[in-house]
Length: 170
Image: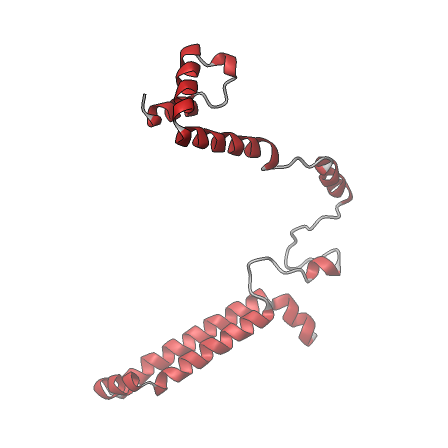
């Protein structure tokens, strides 16, 4: 019997108890494993992975449910709140959401964007395009740069409104 058919039989019977697998299948797989070291190694890897996944992959967390229920009962967890409400503690008020840019990251990204947009006028290709298109080319380009910087500034201010009001006392 070929290696692929033996491996299919092994995978078909995954999760079943040994006495639930037909005797003929057990004998066929056993004999094949005696003469095929590649399949024996593959099944050994499969068994190791099965053991890791069943025991060590997601370790149990004793008392986790009790801890969560106690936090819910006392209300001491991080909660969502509306923009008009104050947060229960200063620690959660200044906590940053993972994956978002910090204030410094926003400022650095804004400066890089501003410098790259402003330096577009100094390129050699820009002069060729500006000469070919004339001064009418400058108006849409200026409007585009203005819109990009305005939208970026609005997003920055909107996402950091609470920090900015606290910092400038508004």
